[in-house]
Image (cartoon, rainbow, N blue to C red; front, side, top):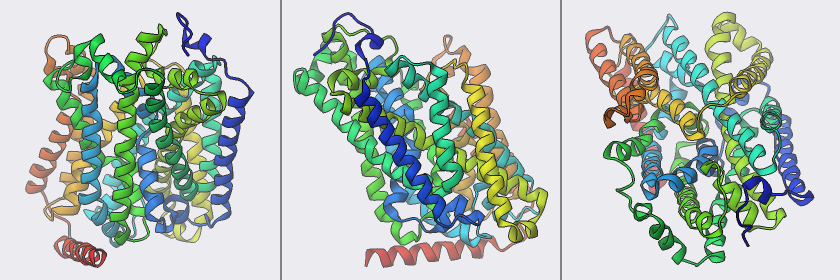
Length: 518
């Protein structure tokens, strides 16, 4: 089954069947985009948030697919292949974090964002929550979204370019541009509904692929003994606590903190039709996530035996899934597996583009044109949103033109930036009446700055002391939380009756939960 002593480019020779499968995949995405366009996208709320009318299953897979980008299919298996089972702490931390996010954030955010001026973006909610008439918090939060999401989106562009270069031997830039154009088209025309429906479709493709590849690989090798053979090659491969440091385990686990502040994920909670549907979405979404991540870890572990026993040359661990899929399967199925990688990449890019577009439109252009213009000229604002999608995509492409880091690191930096800047603020906005405008701004800015400083100046010292290798979301999140609390205690509180609003939100959530249980 293996071709010994060869590189990936020479093992994989995609034929017309592979290209047909990918063409079908692209046509389906464009068809969904057209469907979204034909539905009502005449106002900003519908284009940016689906009119808050999305069902639980689409919500769940849309949140999951936009979260699990190319790093799940390429980055995580590559990390497990390189370091062993200890990399699974990342999957464990993410699953726990996502579950808590559904319990702690989702219900209250769905209710409170509608109550607080029907906010359709996170910065708009922050502004209404702390009664910021100066719009300063909205501008700063919107700026953070634009900056970090442009960087985040570029990681998806890099994944796409790497995929086409590794799997087809095609030019990196051609692959990146092809993916970018297709994502731009269906996001540009179809808006939030198209993005959510494509995410659902892509989520189904992803989970099938993540289950299929490790199982078929084991059947082709030695069955369940394939896993134990990985331990024979290196004992730490199957040790959850070895092959890394204590700081490494804490850092992997801390990825779960990021969920509270990821705009492209928590916006899904804002768009669901009713909070009564959130328990269904949670069960469906977390099950999908757990199975997919388990499959990704399985690909990494089985891949250790696969590569070593077959004499296969793997130049880049992050192309492991590509290599296994193209060698083990018929070209038609191989095309499906490549489509799964594209699904992971494109679902995240489209979500990030739309959230960034929403921020540019709602948090910046609306300030320029005014509230009245926003109400009277909805089509103008939808057009601005669409143009913003194109602008952000072009900037991301320019940044990704010369990649200089691994996919996992690129995602990790942006994930930490959002988690530290917005995570504590989201939690305190939903649960603490003492939050002030100055405290919110101070905490948000300090969290983002600490993440940037940690990446730029502290992590390079990691060879000296393991502490410096700590994932930047931890110092950033803690700093943001502490600064927000202290400054809020020392500064003026909002003029609005926050205590009553929080009580109303709590009552609505509780009543809906009781109705759901009954």
